[in-house]
Length: 379
Image 1 (cartoon, rainbow, N blue to C red):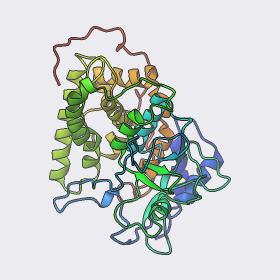
Image 2 (tube, rainbow, N blue to C red):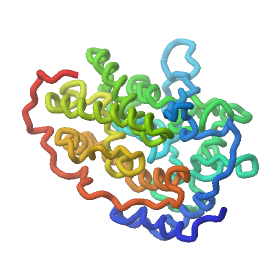
Image 3 (cartoon, one colour):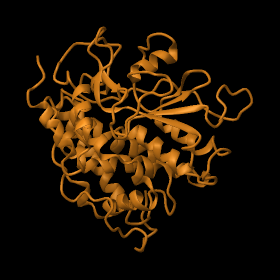
């Protein structure tokens, strides 16, 4: 099938209400998404998250595969050194975005290079199969928040995975984030939760914000328990709703999601952050889902029982993190909305981007710093 005639026009809607990003930027979106509506078969070894669905129609995310660790231990293959590593991300991806937040909160931007892919998935090996995934910017393109791979010269994340194994990678999807070792030209780790912990603790000697600890030992058990259900029911829960292929699977995921959000609302009535008076890693995890919820997930993933703006405590909590903790500088709503609404033909065949909903204002005043909290609330 051919590209829908109205696709370029629909792409232009991405910038409406969020500040137009220029004709050159939109032209590049159209070039990357030129075969957007083509439904082609691809090999089982070149899958995306949309293919990770059980026979019951439930989305079942596969585990990350590269799980090495940066540390100072004697004999460690990967030592924590400045300018030895690069972080490959998508600014649309919540898993990659939380690594950017850790990088910023720890003050490691000077020590670890960052390369960012284009938000719209494109063909990765059109001569081999129909897989669509993350692309880097084309040379000379001016796309906000997107770079070329200035380190390895790869055109796609799939190319980077192949480079890491010096062959053809066929063990997993070609996901972001990726922590890359320049010295060995390979992937150290592609599991965001582990990358976050490495950035938090292993690079202390080169961090500018020494002493910032998002996983304090005294809160370890509490944070671990919070992470368990925040990840399962909220971070991954929105994907369980959006990628479900049966009514039962969708309704089960939706029920768990909103039960967890109700639980968060109650916790935040008692403490400023999830684990108490201090920001921890689980707040960063949750934040990245919450900022995408009303602008994307309510429509795209059918998480429409309630909007986040209808939760008083959660709404103020997002604004608090966005403003006072500096997380807002790494939230790129153009990249976020462009990716979701223009990358999955199975979910949105014409790539139409809905207008931004009213009431999404993360820069608005909040009450989190001035209100009184009841410490009797429990997790």
